[in-house]
Length: 393
Ligand SMILES: Nc1nc2c(ncn2[C@@H]2O[C@H](COP(=O)(O)OP(=O)(O)OP(=O)(O)O)[C@@H](O)[C@H]2O)c(=O)[nH]1
Image 1 (cartoon, rainbow, N blue to C red):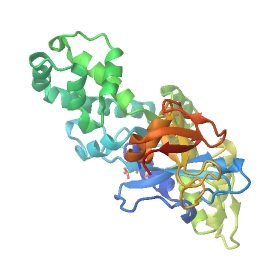
Image 2: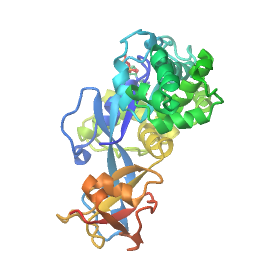
Image 3: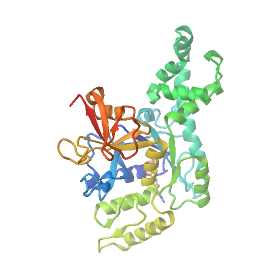
Image 4: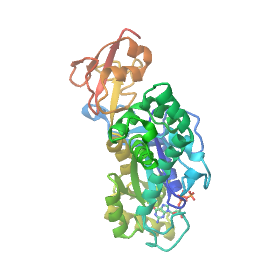
């Protein structure tokens, strides 16, 4: 699986609840193609309309026309204020964060926990401070890596005449930072060509830009069911990507759905009760979730995951097939794969994603919807069904 999202947040923000809720799926859609899963890793799904809805019959890989495309979710533990200086769990978050292409920052929008995550009364903590703390931790962690190795950086850039972007990317490779991201960040600054003139503030500013580009973040304004409205509004202003969520409501709904007590489709604004024997407490809990859903439209969990993938990371879904008429693979399975790719990806890149041999032997592709031939540079559209013609079989 190529897509990994990190879930971060201070203690008691609801991060574990969010993780549990979003990785708890009905067996029907749990056909993900890998087996070993680390305790803090799980599979969640983005929800899209399956292309088989344009055909006469369903493909068998979707649920009534809703396709669930798997992505990996990592519960990033240990990001607490001061983590970059070794506070809390120390550097355990580094490895998790390295793998994450984006971060969902779970925030206690109710403001009922202080900056360290200790419980306090609702509304007594400003959740916007939490956004700042996480950004600061990640930036300072990158600054720390660079500063620790600054002599080496200077020697390579000035002594060995290596490109600055190459050297910085090499140093930050452990954070999952890539060279094009460093180049983009450098373009946003007015730094001197001579790095020995860089001040501490300038290095922090550069790392801040590298963080924004390499670890884009969406805010889950969690506990929205009990959060003061002004907190939700303040958080909406604090970031470009913000979704109000109730991880607790989503967990309750998915758990009840798994036991068969209710029918709940992920991301929907309502559910139906199937079982006859709900206890008064269960009935009361479901009633309060229903009134929350009516107010907020949905729990926000699915919306947050979809937004992270399709807006924050700007990905598209593409369906490679072998038979452009039937939209099947060699075994006759209809629309067997759904790949997430960066918007702007072309047919040749899709061929490489299917298999490196297919990529190397790429001849051309066919749009299975229009039957048009696509050249290697052809930019794929979201939802494309594509046959690749290659010398490799
Ligand atoms: N009202 C409300 N409570 C929530 C929500 N999400 C989580 N909680 C509660 O908040 C508390 C903390 O949730 P956790 O998921 O354990 O928080 P965490 O951030 O993972 O905390 P650590 O495990 O300490 O890192 C629990 O009592 C949850 O039931 C929510 O959406 N609404």
